[in-house]
Length: 396
Ligand code: AMP
Image 1 (cartoon, helix red, strand yellow):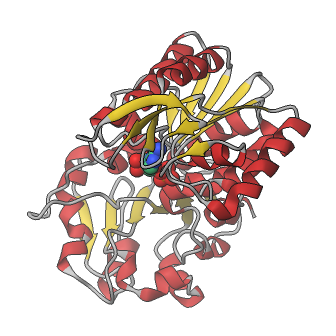
Image 2 (cartoon, rainbow, N blue to C red):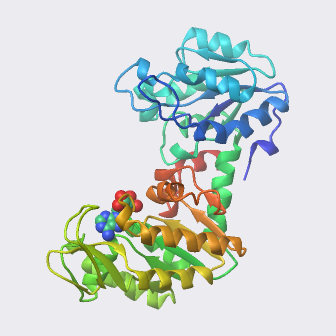
Image 3 (spheres, protein in one colour):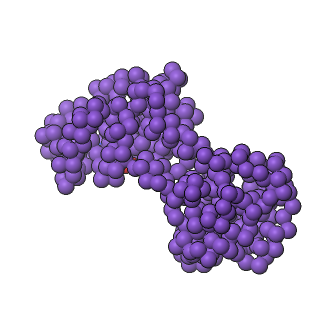
């Protein structure tokens, strides 16, 4: 893997694709700077090595053309504070002013370009647009894992203009390295925990993971499709009837590949999709008509904990209940606690993809696991086994 550690940055203008797609409030102030902070080590390394940095990013979803709400101008002040130096700003990523500023950059200086998505060519992966952007730098660095699954001009297409002069930043490198620890682990047992709402959205992940794991824990809404496929009565729980055969097929495939699948044995059911509903715990195969399973039951939590505690490598994707409602968050909380305990005993744990990151943060577990992925959609596609365009473009 070629990172910025393997490439000479001295006296170079380094064009860095960062992910500064941070949330802003109505006053256009940053409400969560995690993504900015994550990429500071990459920028600081470039400056320390005697290079200058031209930063480019998207922010939000502008429809067509510039919109003040989505201007990266709003983050200049905070970025300057974080870096302890003034950050210059170019109000058009491919305008004359921008090219003047980037060509005048001195070592140690930083320039931030305006939102790339003010041009539709960015998301269309337009080659001419990428060629223009490429003029801003001598070296190209991609540090935006969150958009690595998109073949956009600045994330993938641009790389061809930097033969031998392209590298991953530290955010990207860490994501690749940590997912690799799970997917290519020599340490065993490896356990994947797949939760979330629907089987359909996790099917490819499950199929991709089967040859790579020893245990597969399945929880959340999708567990009820598996329960029904095994002949259970699931009341009005979430179900995908068109995937019943597929669920049975997965169970057979897992057995053939010696993967132990762990499904919930009991379920916390509610008579309405509400935090104030009446609740009861039953066997997951015997849910009454009109009741829906919204969390795993206590026996399941004990069972999942036992599997997690004997695992050397753990991947967690997706909550095992409707964790957003306090009454149905217990299963996800206990699952997270088991992962933390395993981590404290020396296991490697990765939380990634979508809502499990939100759950880990909500229960303050994010600092206590080995690694929390920064890219929701990108991580999901990575786990599905997709070659991410943003990664492939650097490796080419
Ligand atoms: P996903 O984005 O597929 O990982 O799904 C996450 C969502 O699944 C969360 O919003 C949870 O509330 C939801 N979820 C988890 N368990 C259940 C369940 N038993 N019934 C309905 N939704 C669920």
